[in-house]
Length: 395
Image 1 (cartoon, rainbow, N blue to C red):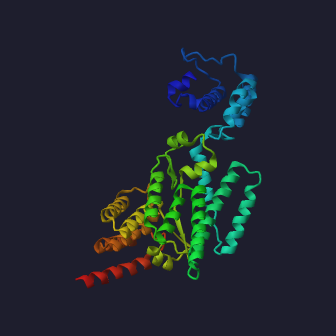
Image 2: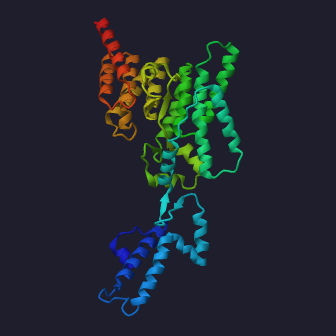
Image 3: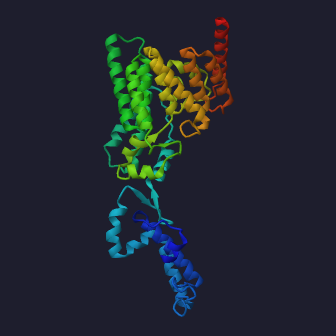
């Protein structure tokens, strides 16, 4: 322990004792293997001379290696230590690694879980299919589930809810006013459930629905709430997280609740489903099954458009400036580089809507320079041509 402290290889504090123990233990194995363990106060003295050599050293090395293979769980062999460690091991704050036996912080394990869940793809695009799927999910909820199974079911519930909501919203043309009102109530209810169960950014789907139905005040209310939640310093987004703050804020929070409080996912706009009219052209010409955009960009886009519709000129221009500043100065933390094509396109659309044609033209041209992740070139070129024609008419 003294040698490890002097070397400065470990951080000695109460929350790091197991890591310190494991490093000391590996140093001890190294010393037994060499047959040399210098006294800390008189380094010339080898404490293993005539005590740890020959067969005794081989037997000790074998025993230590067995403990090494067990990891720090070897401490559970001691009845005294077991009574102390078992309550800690049952805590959701950390997971015990079977190999090295070090504690993986919940931020790292949650990032792995978030990545694996993002691999799930839902190919259901019909109301009946989605209804049967959600009914099956509800049945599974009544079974005995582990924390990770519950998290998976929870995640698999929100995306179909969002998709079903917007499919229903796109099929209201032949309904009476009463039926439209009832359907609107159901759609808002489903989107609120999705926002309650899902990651932080899923609240933006409700904001998108409010915007497309002309409720701009409610849209701004939702975007303001979402913006506050997105600004939390312990969020996980795009493989980026402040591990220390995440662990401090959420170490005692259940796994499914951590997803609702701190996980931030991109907003996906699925093909053939209209979410917002301003992006209809982009969805129409898109060569893949969805458009993907940063939630930070969606917040600013909805703020710009809603303020514009309400006639709030100064707030609209401020939100437009915030969006432009985000794209100009962000290093990829809030707008990943692979999503910059649609992000610049959205800035151009917002500028076009408010009447800044020259700014819109520059933004569209900037969109063409980005990596074509969302495959928007055809839509961008069409918008550039529209802006040029409009500028010519204004001359």
